Structure formats: structure tokens, C-alpha cells
Image (tube, rainbow, N blue to C red):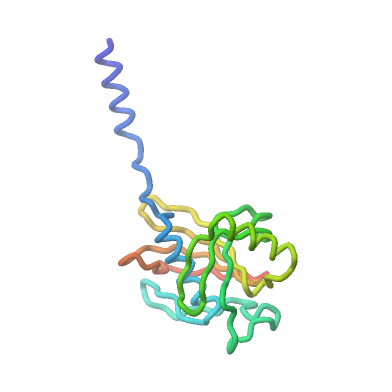
Length: 172
């Protein structure tokens, strides 16, 4: 009886789907942020497979607040925060000059939240991301900057995010 129970348990566990790869590792999160914000803020092409011209993000100018000649030094990012949280808090930052994204420390995140509340971090210095890891290791992402947003699926090639398929554009 015990042997049969152990056998059934082993069979059930063996039939469970394997967990998705670590699609949301800090390196992959940074890669998605860097890829998306180079496109949204800086106007660069999105790396895509198959290669395709990148559409324009609607309202990229942030109501005229974004000067393409004088980009913000830093864009603060809400990664996987609730709808309310994404407007009041950030947990990552993107350095525009170096094209590098990094997580904020708890103290930095607290400072940024206070600055957002005080109104000293304008919309052109903030972005949000929501991601869902896929079983195949890809990451389905919806990201927003100013009053535009886009959704797409990213694969990772040599640890760089590459858009797979279509980018769906949303305007507000």
C-alpha cells in the first residue's frame, strides 16, 4: 500500500509542468527596461525578431515636456507595482546617458516616492512595467511612458531583450 502511494505521488509530481525559467531575474528585468526605454525615451529602434521598424510611442513628448535635445538624466521605473503604486513609487532607475537600469535601494526608493509626492519628478522621468513570465522563458510585458504604452513579448538572446512578434501600442 505504501509503495503504491509513493508511486502515485511520484507520478503526479512527474506530471506537473516544470516551472518557467527565471525570466524575471534582475539581469533580465534590467535588459527589458533598457530596451524599452531606449525606444520610448530616446527614439531608438527596438531589437526585434523578425526585424521590423519600430512604431512610434504615442504621446512620447509628454505633452511637450520632453525635449529630445535635453533628455532627462534618469527615468524612475515602477516594475511590477500595483496600479496605485506605479504612480507613487519606483523600484528601479534607468540612467539615460549610460543606458543602464538598476534596482533602487530601499532608501533611494523612499526618497523617490517622497519626490513624486512633492511633484518634483515629472512624467517624462517615470515609466511603469508589468510583466508575466512565459513557460518558454519569454516575458510578456506591458510598459508605459508618459501617456503612451505598449505590450509585447520579449525573448532573451545573449542576455539582451528582443521583441518577438508584434508590439501593440496603446494611447491614453
